[in-house]
Length: 390
Length: 129
Image (cartoon, helix red, strand yellow):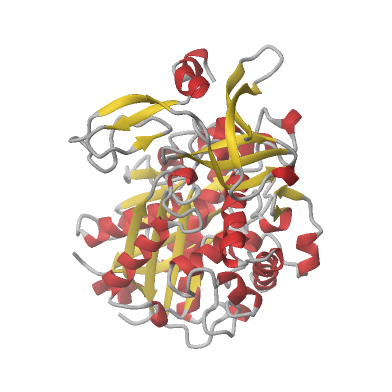
């Protein structure tokens, strides 16, 4: 297998993009990425795109064909285009498929993208489409919502480890603060612990400000064999690990409700593949679809011991400038969570950090970064490790 | 949801009929045709659960799932059945009565409905024992 590098990135603004369609945002992100990489359409061997639910959100399937077409890559070049779906981990999985295609030697230049257009439907429909990431027949029909499932994780985490609502809120406050420094973030305003605790209850103990928003957005990266990456850019970012793990789709079938064991396993596989330990990671973008999800993630990936994530978040140990900066982009909470785009956006953010171009949110001396993308309540986890040095 | 999609699950939803692997002895609810431990060596048979169990974790839902708007707030829990497996279900009680460790038993109730003219879903909810 060949080493693989990211040689270009692109991202749209995240938020309620009323004047843009799914194809508009995908093409914008893709074009930004290939311009950044300095490549031509003729060089592209394939497209992989993460999209959870074009069918529910914009009544459009066959997204691979649509985006290849409107990217100008279908009618003459006939570039193969593959849509990848794993609920909210669709983007991370599209990235992984692209990396595997280049690593195998089958393809040289791949564009891996992710996008979701969620605001073309009413809130009820969007919530129901997201609920399809859980087991419809044994969770959804019982009245389970996505916030409801994560609320049950939070309740047990509080019971077992003494985690508090204030500690959950601290995750949201930190991510909103980071969002203020991110030009593409959906929310760029500071909030306080009180903002979270006084917001509407969605599913106890989770308030509205514990939940990531409904968003539109797309992101893309260009992948190339590491051996030729420097031909395209002075600052390639090298893929040190791409891993994935499955776990039962239903929360009730997990061995421990407070542990996303798919995250644990995907993380362990990634450390093994890269020959690294959690101590070697300079920063991480984790899947904070809810505040409790960030707390579980930083524990499950080995940065803090199980049960200590809430305290660590409250004590500022995940802020920019601390030992372990988490979600410098503002995470899903503040940057926004267009579900299919998130896994790719995480890779874009880490690439910018490792290139040293992350602006106000730059982590000093960032050399190794990780991304962690989760599907559903933990049925799929995808982890990547990236490095500035080969 | 089509009638057939709901109808084929009626025995399981109404009467908590799951499965049991006689090779390893594990019980499964929701029913599974493939034992995750024994896989092809597993011998799967139907099993009627008593439905009594213990609340492992719970939430009170204020923003409802589609079709459940008229029920808010409602209690949703993960319940560990006496035979071993856990399931997701609603517990009918005042939120204050619900704690981790609360013992519950099953009752037959309306789960939800699609619309005035649409399907009504029945199935199992739980009450405090």
